[in-house]
Amino acid sequence: MVHPLLFLQFLRGILTPLLFPEAVKAGGEALLNAYKSVDTITYTWLVMVLLIVVSVLATKGIKSMPGGMQNFMEVVVGGIENMIRDTMGEHGKRFFPLIATLALFILVSNLLSLIPGFFPPTASVNTNAALAVIVFLTTHVVGFQAHGFKYLKHFLGPIIWLAPLMFFIEVIGHFSRIISLTLRLFGNIGGHEIMIMIFFALVPFFVPLLMTVLGLLVCFIQAFVFMLLTMIYIQGSLEESH
Image 1 (cartoon, rainbow, N blue to C red):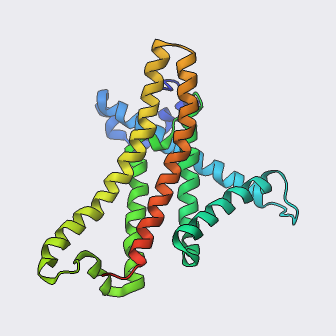
Image 2 (tube, one colour):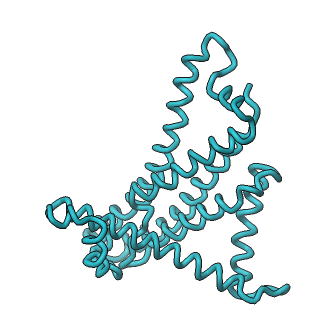
Image 3 (tube, rainbow, N blue to C red):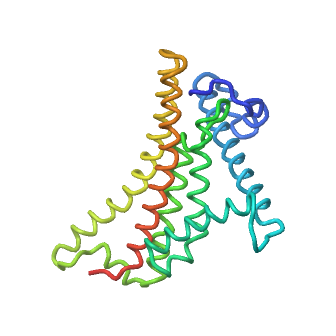
């Protein structure tokens, strides 16, 4: 981990015995894994609190002529809304809360990797897998809501006699989306953490600074990619099967 000392590390001693009592008794590797899980949970809640605070500040005393936090958040939210409309059309508006929440949560989590003493939740496979499962379930719930049981035609293909084979392939393909979303985000954010640690040990200043600048770009790109794929998957479930 790039940040061996975390600002909220003291919570390990409080939460680990409550959440992972068996790991505390076992010690060793089990205890280290429990510490990692506690760090992930702690900083996930930190991101949630930050987003809630920013939302309250941005919506408190809304003015027709926005300024400060309201102005900034209107630009961010408006940009996400325009992207959803351009990708999914007008019917994509009802998915705005989910997509915007995923985008902001992932972006803020990614940006924590650039701050010493903070652990990015998206550097954990568990966090990313949870987000991917949400997208996966939403995609198919929306598909069944839009088409009923006709939605199963998406998995059968256009040729009847190939339907059993196509169903097997499509099911694997759809489940692989969970793995793809999870590992893409984890690999980029977790990999960035490891690279900075290595370069910081070799060249203490210039290279880590350059990697931090590149990491800032990665943080935004990965949040964008996750949001874009979510929109594409949901849009695909709404389309008529061929």
